[in-house]
Amino acid sequence: MVDFETVVKTRRSIRKYQDKEVEDEKIDKILHAAMQAPGSRLGAEPWEFLVIKNKDTLKKIGEIKPRVSDAPVAIILLANMEKSFYKQVWQQDMSAAAENMLLEAVNLGLGALWNGVAPIDDRMQKIADIIGVDNENIKPFCIITLGYPGEGFENKFMDKYDESKIHYETY
Image (tube, rainbow, N blue to C red; front, side, top):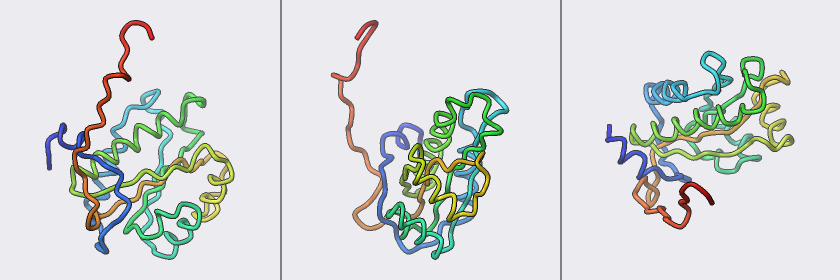
């Protein structure tokens, strides 16, 4: 484990992975981190997760989201609209869970990439069809790919701080 400041400052979008399996224990820790995210209402978190390791399924998803094809594992974040309390902000709830996953991946020595799916209806439907979702209340939100970073791809510090983007009291 690394300290929180290091995790936040070194997290990068990792687009290439080693051909090495991600341990189930690490996947479990990432899912636990996701469910610790804040939601718009306690007890009404809409998130559900589908873990995919099957290479054929990853390749099918890769036809829509190419970066998924070669990942050792992908986790699809699904919003269950029946569990969402504030129907207008479900994407915010899902985003909080996704960010926790990305940070925990770094903490565990993994690389990760956020692959957007929502709000593009056609893309959401194609992903739903591949994974067998036939319930209109379950919406694919994003796909987090995970793996050990490939050569030349690592979580490292890159200073993105820009003081010109900070405003106080008024714009």
